[in-house]
Each structure stands twice: as structure tokens, then as C-alpha cells.
Image (cartoon, rainbow, N blue to C red; front, side, top):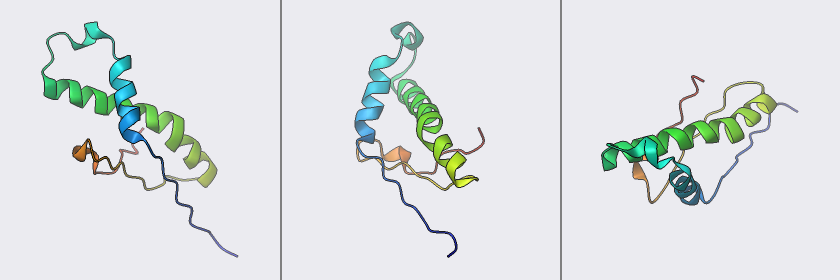
Length: 85
């Protein structure tokens, strides 16, 4: 029968980013600019999403899978996640 493509859509990514923001330790933010805080949120969210969602899907698929984050609140997320980890 061959391979069957599967599309997974994770909704509420903006809410996920907001949760990551709220969970940041305030002491880690001291002295950071607004842009640096946004970058930190994006990095932490990407790492958490990689660990909890993408890696389990890759284990099922047996290889790296293409994925992209799209957010109306965070347009800078319109690029694929790094699969280097």
C-alpha cells in the first residue's frame, strides 16, 4: 500500500507561547530587552514543543519530519523548527 502522509495540526500555539512566557523565572529576565525576552520565549517554546510533540512523532515516523510553526501573534515563527537536536 505504501506510505500514507499524515498531517498534524497543533492549535492554540499562541496560548502555548503565553504559558511559556508566564512560566519564565523573573530572575532570568533581569536586564534583558523586550526583544531578548521574546527570543528567549521562542527558544524555550521551541525546545518544549520539540520534546513533547515533534520527537514522539518522529519516533513513530522513524525519521525527521518536516514541521513549521505559524502564529498570527508571532509572525517571526513562520520558519521550520530546527531538527538538529
